Image (cartoon, rainbow, N blue to C red; front, side, top):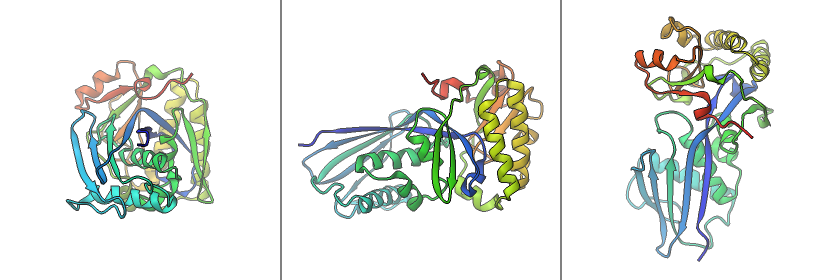
Length: 304
């Protein structure tokens, strides 16, 4: 009997460039402490018994798949289809994947709410890719599309810059551990946003001038030493993306009385925003009805 396996992949937050990453803009991206784990237990009974648990340990998805073609024994729905596509893509890349065994219990466990937009799909793709020993960027592109920055984060536990150069990912580790972290907060907007839909609905593409401006801002974000400097960069970045997608910045629409700066992350209109302001900002956002307000280093690894 083969040895049971365990995998883990980090969640993700996109700090700069947002939609423009798909067009080659350089982005600052942060892997999160929270992620998704996956256990593979070999068993005698044929087939793949798949169990997905949420952050509370409750089963939110369960199905049985055949090993040879990954057909479901019981149902057809969006989640079943997604798992099938990931497994099929993995088996195409590694034809020896699952060849020597016929029975598996696969159990996934989310470390964050699946409504938070921290990468429930990308962490799954990366975990399955580790199991199959294949390239997760290929699977992500084939099944979900997108820039792939979330896959890069899934493999890391430190800040990175991410850029597509001739459609190939360039990933670099960066030392972004802001000394003003006590002024930084991640605030959940109580809405899950679909990045693919947002891109289709709002993003018009980017000029070379706009790409260069975002690239320069990403470098300056990494080097920022003071909260006031970081706030100025956040404000400038919001103005660029606002013009790109034709939507007003979130601070203008929702947090105009905040004593700091608020910046959307990733797909505008939902998921998390980044706030840079007073140390007691949690009270402000709570009073506004945004109960999930996470201090920077409670969500982001501090490094060595």
